[in-house]
Image (cartoon, rainbow over the protein chains, first blue to last red):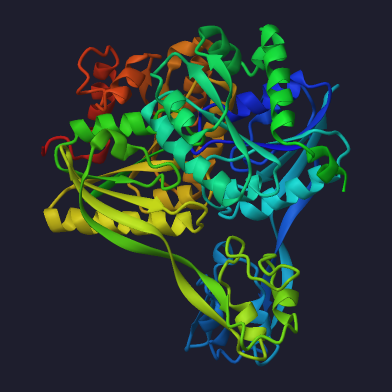
Length: 288
Length: 291
């Protein structure tokens, strides 16, 4: 079973749900796909070990062969190369998507390819959790390759089920995290911002054809607009986590709240069971 | 003209709530929502839309089936897994690089502009407002951020405004980089939590990397006074000003549910704290004495 935890917006409690769900299960693999701000490890007592670098392909220019014809710059859709007639070639590596087109088009063979590091994959273990964390290097704009990498490494790990903590939003990184999941938990808050962003996230799950359910976090701070929306859209509300000073304090200290409020562990286990019922046959696909 | 961008490593720290409060305090400014993934500022600003411009994101490959001989070269060269085993182009994966078009011997593939969202220019009770809407599952949010900012600058010049207030995206990736570039000041909003401190450090690395002056606001500071102290000490050690500390206050949610800014929602004890923070920021930006 592959469950992704997403929300249109940040700060709704994705990591809280991911960590506490992982903590409540007998065993699982937890994958932190929020590579810009990976937070899962902050809540789990474990040593993280860097296991792999994430690299992307990047062109190398042999200026002794270059005739400054400018075809590479014309070809590049990402404006990563500029050629000035006065025999200057500028390469903006941050803009390069590594498509390899410049190398293909160069008539003099002046372009070869090397690699460039853009992030790291870390791994750690507790009694019941295998944690994989993707971390993008500061200043690097493209999160998607790091997410792809951490997912592929984590999927080789043996502990099932697998829980993916998604980055916020509905753009490239969130979609990469969600792709391939059997089920999507959407975490939201009962406020106007929460509802607006939930609608966007529901749109993504429908576009990717992933069944979804909602966890309402901080129940009690706003109103019942999430309940009304989910009723109309026939989206199951799987769990509600009450607004609580104690949960906020535990969170602020980096402690999964199920560690202290043990009654919630049963609720998270029930959450998992209800997802299993909603996704029949997911284990079979998992083994194939 | 000056630009201030409000960011936070993490979402949900209160960026939009603070931006909206600034909008009702600033006298001569354009607001821009650059959190194009989860744009929420419009919910409070209640904009009257004046103009909606199409946003062309990345291109997308399109194949002419009548010309295709299923040779599979396109799939061989595509590095983004955008051509599946049946040689269909998967739009969501396609980055529009044009390599498939180049390697296709039959000239069966073309590149199309795709409309990935819109840029919206509005009027609000606090002045002009520009925001972006990314269509669901579309990419290139960094590019949309750049265009929203560009439009906001045009509006500011046209209307003689002296400040742009930008609600930034969370994270430190492409959209965040696009949002802070060219800003005169960044306000980094953080929370006194373990993750808040961790993300603040990453955000400060980013603003440092791009050499942008940064000040800090600790939101919900009363949740964990010890952590708030640690963040304050950390900022002092880095030579950064903490321009505001807002205690946790459910007023922020109540104001949001009512569709008001914290300044308009008058019962709030934290409104004065926000006023104080705004005065400090105005002084930093040297715009305070003009309004």
